[in-house]
Length: 360
Image 1 (cartoon, one colour):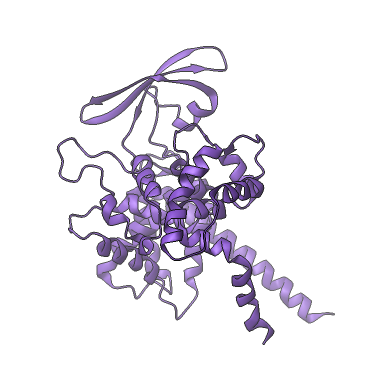
Image 2 (cartoon, one colour; image 1 turned 90 degrees about the vertical axis):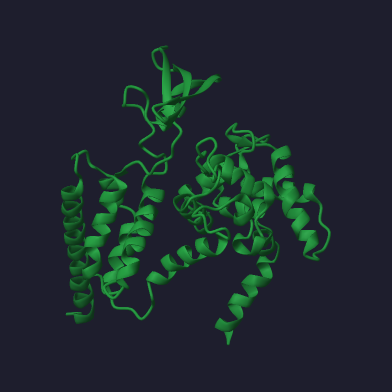
């Protein structure tokens, strides 16, 4: 009898059993926190779940008490970034159709869009022609972002929960470092210490390698509008900053790339043209030359991007094209970050440097 094989088989069975038990317990714990029993967790419920796990997680149990609340807030936000990318609190006036449904099933008549303010909430009114059935509807969509709700089933299947469960294992690494780093980064950028970031302050992120147009578009698409007359109108709060950082750190994921594509889609048409690529890369080109690099042709870079993506429609690049080509994160980096373009331009040298230590 092959005892080694038998040991591995038993060990694998135990791991599967342990995973099943852990997921079952997680589902029970989350369901107990689900106040309205709708199968979704609100932000404060997700934070409560994470807070309850900390004493049993070897790598977190010694976390400074003063940082626990902030850690739970950041960790919960990561769950919502990956498990609730469409912000499920955005619903029509019948409370049933989320915005993503309207995009997929309706012909939106945005030319009739009207901004309203009802009860202190900003609403967007527009008509939608339902493609199935030919019914015309009028919808009121809240423009306040909010975190919405995360589906418990989706949370249980997410990599975020798997990463959290792995903290059961002892490790010398400080897990809180990454969360604390985001907090420290936000505080360092917040020069006027008003609790939010202006465009000028955010430009200092990543040593100022991000382009001006990308910062502008990030504010246009992902920063909620402040109340008129407020001192910090159109400034980025901590939650929006976490989304911003998560998207840049996870450019190759559907969620991260979706966030970035909205910034790249300069005219909100759902696709990029050669003119859009030229406009986006112009800022990268300027930073590239200012950095003392060799002269390059924007048209050559544009053609290279087209070759990398190979879009279904030769005249436009969609989000689906970027996801399908498996190089969407690289393309996004090339268009928003001079450091990202440098990494692509020097990819062969960087790969060789990574392989050299292995040969020794």
